[in-house]
Length: 383
Ligand code: NM2
Ligand code: OGA
Ligand code: ZN
Image 1 (cartoon, helix red, strand yellow):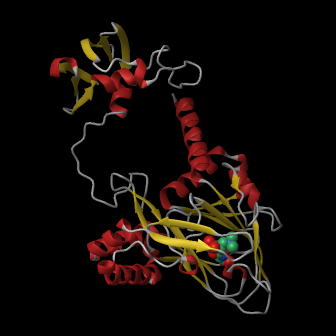
Image 2 (tube, rainbow, N blue to C red; image 1 turned 90 degrees about the vertical axis):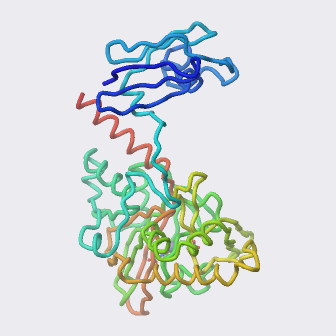
Image 3 (cartoon, helix red, strand yellow; image 1 turned 45 degrees about the vertical axis):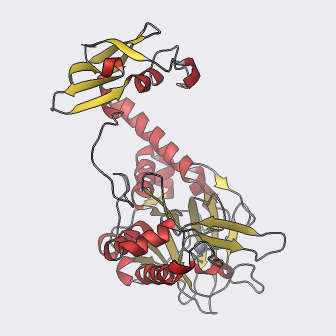
């Protein structure tokens, strides 16, 4: 509930008071740009109809009042009066003074370790997720919160992994195909197509933008070994930062190089850090893949020893069993990882029996969009 509105700075700002004692300031130019009226935003699709250049640079608040749970404002020199619902203002308030430490993440992200996750792996059955919006919502929400989830109850047949991506979005086709066969091959163009163990990694760091989701599904798995594991890269990055802030700083402030040139006609290259922070220090992406790390040439000579020490420590933590969650995929099971956060690994496997997995890439924007739309629908139904 809004209690008062106080114009300041000769109309350039306004301070709003709330029943719980909080005060939130807004700028006139910000409020004008974000006006909700149908001359500013299309009533049909919600998109903004005006450009910044349509708004006078000297926009000020001429008058303001709190009326029936909303804030009514007149902007000068346009002489335009608009209303902002109190809950909209509260949801969009930007006047905070909490300082965020580099490596911070939003409230929806929950870091995990073996101890907190091994016995509570997020899981849904495909038929239940396909027929039930609530089940699908929980499953997608787990991907958002933990960066991975298992799905079972899929047909153990070729192409079944597309059913998973169809639940929320679109496959991202790459040089590996719309989807790819993961099994031991004679002349593999990628070490994934062997029976070797694979150190925990994110896929395709040599691609920019990196695929933000990967799905791996199982059709057959009768080999000795070949277990899957996942590691929360955000939890490991936080652990590195806690014990070695300088190492965290080195890995997040210098670009690594990644490359894949394993098949003819393909030479994918990227220049990105192993731990990527956004402009405000938000932890946004982990890239870690020993097989495709290229020569590092963007670290100053004076820092290279310490950079390598940090890389080694990061790798040791990634391999620390207290971070890994392990399971063996069975036919009809799949798992999805947020490839910007959660690393996946596989144990080596023997020559007896058969192991046939399929993989594909997809993107998180579509998954988060589908989740937000379902959540919005549930909220409307509850109102
Ligand atoms: N495969 C499975 O990122 C990588 O190179 C890991 C990718 C070949 C599509 C393997
Ligand atoms: C991959 C991969 C894991 C597996 O294909 O990217 O990591 O279990 N495979 O084979
Ligand atoms: Zn992989």
